[in-house]
Image (cartoon, rainbow, N blue to C red; front, side):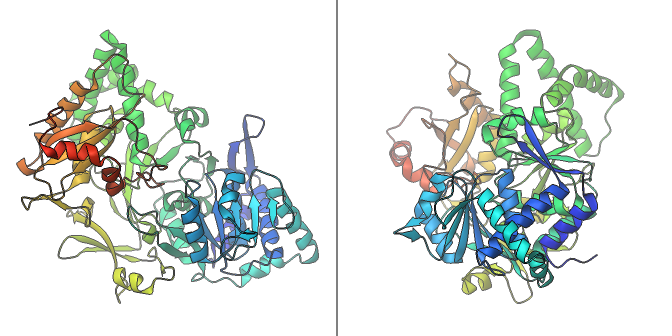
Length: 588
């Protein structure tokens, strides 16, 4: 059946799935609460009617400024069923940028997580821009202009009592080309741009994912990703199409504990989460010492060698298969059990996954399906499939997505996942989407004979040393993080410099008390340097005194590094590296 809107598709899934579980989330009194598909539909319909009672009209923007939680999902569904368009706002966004985003998109209502988010919306005696109502997830109603979620639902029920077909009439008038979502790209430089995604974009993506048969209706997903980011949002589109269950909890400090508790079938994450799991396991194993550490070291040596053999399409000898069985029983099965015991695969996106991390998880028996997409392409354009993962690539295109490479290697994409355009920016839209519908991604890549895509770098991230040599910083940064479990973030500096250096942060959970991390770090950089061209090698490093943070402006909310901000914040340290006076941590 062809659907005209995400709301129509969602309600069709609710009608088909009825009493089956749709969502679960932490309850207010402890434990977890569940919602069936029918219950989810009822709650979303009441909230949608509440928005209609507030005067929200088709394609008007309704913003959500909150962390990932069940209420975010319900608010988004309410916006969809009311025919409006969700504008996503990260809860970490500062008041100035909140003002810019809400004014630029002309939002009329905002779902705000709590009074802290509400305070960012205040302006004089009212709210910023065109906002006339705010709905709080946590907090009490304040007069007519600030409602809580229950108050909006009650308003909706009163509206439906008078106009029982109100939501159905809105949905009947919706068309696939209508605006569904505006997601502002956090960007590593400049003002964020609002990416306009239509109902057709999300419907295409849900159907394309479902057609692969990788995610099944009996699957349980653990969703912690920021729903303000396209990666989190696309997983909801897939759920409405397929009908699996999603456990929602966006608290990052609870991820590992929640995986063990929820026992999901699959989980999507940015590479940093997989790096932290790898780092924690390897540090724990190393700290154990003795026979246990030797067994683990041998198990991973056998397991990773077997992974590499399979990647090269070479057979695994019988003696090695026997060793793998022992390694699995003594080491790998225990790691899988710590992660719930039911994971069939993991999904990685948002940034490059280091091949060494992918090999490690594959050895454990938890293949990572690395994919690739941008906000401008609805979040997913390529992905590896179970059973045919090619480590170091982002897989092959989703059905309906076309790809070609420009003369300079830039990846060009065309298909139903490509955005309608940048909000209020026709010139910038025309600069990236040509007359034939090809979207210029800004990423450089290579396609192999079987259509697997390898991302080699960002077009704008290539830097040139003072000697005129180009360096791809992200590749070096990923290699260093993979080679050293202690490193949480790495920032290569080389642009206009006579050699490359690197700023590092250490994961406090991975650094053992009383140990000197410099020995481990230097060994890792030596290993990475051995595989680089001479002009790419890292000559010096510095360990920063703290982790990079979103609050300091050094990371985007999706945890991408803002290189220029890091260099600015640590300008004195960078000057020390290149002044010739700094002799600590000199390498090579």
